[in-house]
Amino acid sequence: MTHSLHHRIKRALRHVRSSAGHARRTFPPDDLKAFAEAITAGEQTHRGEVRLIVEKALPLDAAWACMSSRQRALALFADHGVWDTEENCGVLIYVNLAEHQVEIVADRGIDRKIDQATWQQVCRTLTEGYARGEFRSSTLDAIGQVNQLLRQHFPSDGPRPNELPDHPVML
Image (cartoon, rainbow, N blue to C red; front, side, top):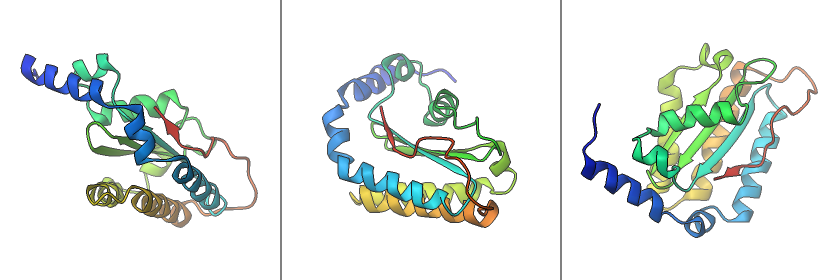
């Protein structure tokens, strides 16, 4: 699909104008701590690994190339090793603030058991909450939904190592 020059310029400017300060106000340190605690607590009840990555904006070259949020989420899924868990049960929750979009990428072990429509419902929890300005509660709700799905399909079978960091990544 080709994108007009006007579209590329408009999109690139939206991403360039996105500020780290806006991202920090949207997700302050106390919220990030609460998200990490929710991920840690959930991972005690299932065998999955959950990562939350919040990106203020795409890198300029990606915005100019019209990279989709889904493509970016897949790239970050690989870059942050979410795919590299013992049971192939990593889940990435990706938030792109400039695009007002969220994506969930699940590793192949999970993808076999949880369909795309279920993940889209979790994404709606985020986007609808964010539209109301409820960033903290919506994110905690979504993390809770992901943990519940993983608990249902990959229940804990005893202590195991934490394979991925639980603290959110802010880009």
